[in-house]
Amino acid sequence: MQAGFSRRRFLRSLGAAGAAGSILGSATSSPAAASDSRSVPLIASSMSGSSSGFVHPQKVLLWERTRKEVREDLQSGNLKAAIVPTGSTEQHNEHLALITDAATATLFAQQAALRLYPQVTVSTPCPVGYSPYHMARKGSLTLRKETFLAYVFDVIESLTAHGFGTILVVNGHGGNHGLLKGAVPEWRRKLGVTLDAVSYGEGYTDEELATFLTSYRQKLEGKLDTLARQTAHSHASENETSILMAAYPDRVRFITLEEYDQAGLNYESDMPPKVWEYMEPFEAQRTTNPENPRDRARQEQALLATPEKGERLIAMGTRYIVDRLQRMMQATDAGRPWP
Ligand SMILES: [Zn+2]
Image 1: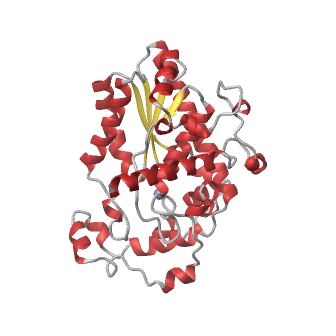
Image 2: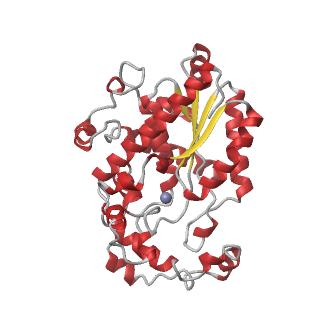
């Protein structure tokens, strides 16, 4: 009962957030144009997709559709491909909601599907990923590697059973990345469909990010003095915080560095014996270095985030996924092997 209730709430929240994300301007290519579009519905005709009018953002979400709608879209040949978002529920420092990676993966997937409407649907996201090394921070959840891979495979296999010939996993969490890349070749052989897995962060290079993200520019210019500061970019810092500020401002809290320091956080002292035991296989993560300084550097870099930077990141990452999906669908149509 309780589980059912929570699940319904989670799905509702994703649906609502997805709808919000779609009118936040990431549909357009420049931040200025993006801001202008905030008060109007998404206009698909202005994009590279084949639709000629308004598309309600929920129409590309599989779990918001009925069996009749999915059946008819598949039968007509309008619907060809599915995206499977994978994320995590894990600590994102002091200021971002735990659902961040599942929310961003779903956001990028939905934005890409809207541009390609009606050809692409977004499958129900995988909300928990492989995150054992985050367990020292409260609230983080993790799956075992085999649970995560079995879940994603089962979802993909369900989709192939319904006739989807092109399936792209869009990942939002670093811990899932290597697992997915490693599993995809075997999944392709087993399922015989056009299948791939990308993390949305693959859509940018550090050099591109350095043109508008301060922390990346400082890194390239050698202005970040410690290893902790140089490696703080990938998680909960300027990049990810900007994306959340643009698409999901309700999931961002404002935390000053002073407040962070006052909390006196420490990966060792903050870890109950049970978690300490759990973390044993992740030896490097149990020590104070470099995790404590890196944690602080992330909090510092998050203060550089703005919604405008987030809009650019969403537009760039979405273009990357759209391009990949278009080429995958062409391969499926032509009967060519992928990749
Ligand atoms: Zn994240």
